[in-house]
Length: 121
Length: 107
Image (cartoon, rainbow over the protein chains, first blue to last red):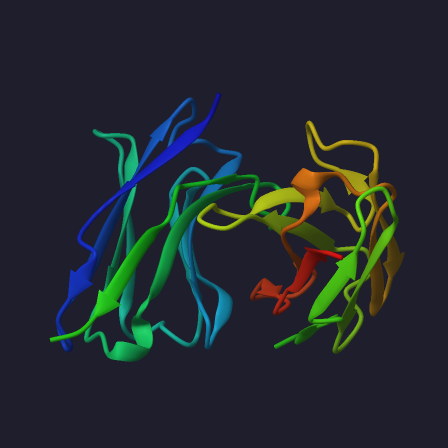
């Protein structure tokens, strides 16, 4: 079955870059029917969709307006994974970050295990 | 952006009883509405999409209804494993947006 395995540091200093990776098993990051998302969850913001990457003959990205100037989501076809980079973080970016798949509909049927990321000096 | 509002924030129900959770959208989302269940320390799990279609492997005691701006998730006979937080999510308009959740607790 499809599984997503997240990795990355749990502590990031203010103004630095948050970097997480989501490794895919049982599906392909280059699938023509799936998209690969990052979602975060915090007490103040609730569940917040951040963005996604997907392949439809070429690569596309969608980003939430709230983070559009700071976010990059990249696929890595050689390792069948995708990554999140969020620049210039502040304590407000402290959250549990999830990777997730959507197929066709913009609903999320497979999720990673979540990574608690704290932004603190 | 569409704002999703769930009520109540907390619902206390006894095992074996029926639970009814509500979700309201700030504008019509047609039937492009999903429900998720989240247990402590776990990722959300997709329960319902298209307002009323159960996702793969979801028991029949979970049902969804509604269209436009008003939606309901009903759990017909609560089992111990159903006590969790439930979220609705609209996907009719970009960006996808979640409600703030309803915590279903044991009475």
